Length: 427
Image 1 (tube, one colour):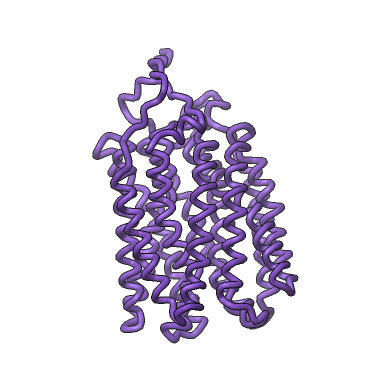
Image 2 (cartoon, rainbow, N blue to C red):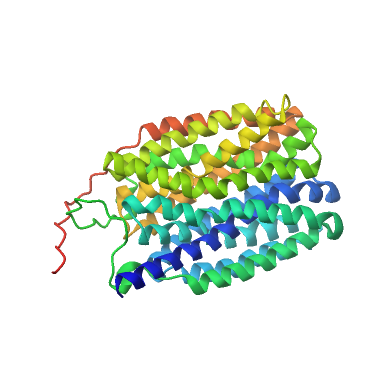
């Protein structure tokens, strides 16, 4: 494979990841919209409905760990195919539920398995092809699928519910996931080494061969735990806000359901542009400090602080709609910095060869705790206090914890054995 073919192949990897992220965040974005009419129709409390989402994210976390082992051995195609089957089934079967138990089984278990095949596979596949000064902007392009899902699928779901009902909306989403993930399966590629090429974006001066970290060895170092706490703090806050935002606007602020969904969709609309822009910014930081781990660390400190500001401003939405708009804008900026940043930092510290397993286990920990805790607490505090304001204050504090953990990230992890010098390429 020559350089031109390699670039074309790498772009196909990014396109496949875009589709995977689109479907993954489609589950999250549409939940905030569909939970309202579904809860009203089935007479379920906010905590009961949020528990289904929490279960889905817990199953997602376990499956994500398994997907890491799959992609290190067989690549992303099997993971994407499983996502197509289980993800579509999760949406479709949920459309026919009439009890909480059936809802938990359909949305929680089937949806969890489907989405669990998407995060690690999409993030690691981009990291395999792009490193150093090129990683963040290419991941930003792939991650645009997330805000696109938030805008398109949220608005489409909102538009069909009044006429066809929430059950039809679930069925429609199942069909979208099936088609998108089958296409992603076709586009997915193996790692660069399988084609005899190297990843793009290597930093100047890299003279050592990549050390092959074992999972146990990696998790015996502080670096992985620091990045886990960084990601976990942001995840708890993020998923609390994401899963309850529409309800906050409707019940606490007094907006109409339609206006609330429109404001919530602003996060996705801004995210379409903030993802690649903040990716470029993050790569510029890496280039300016001439050290990838240090550059990723700086971005990971800034991201949660933006989340703190967004929560503080969100609480002022009742005074003026402008505060709500600004808060959603800041949430989109935060969103563009953390998910890709933690993978970039982990890859900079531990390399690419076993990144699937390492990040898969980190994802199991983070996703097994963060989304479930955040989304459930959002509904729980609402049921206990009658307002979502306590939930948002909790999210603000969680962002603070994330920023503090990011500030402690080390710039290297010492392996047990010193890597051999890398072979110089033949002339």
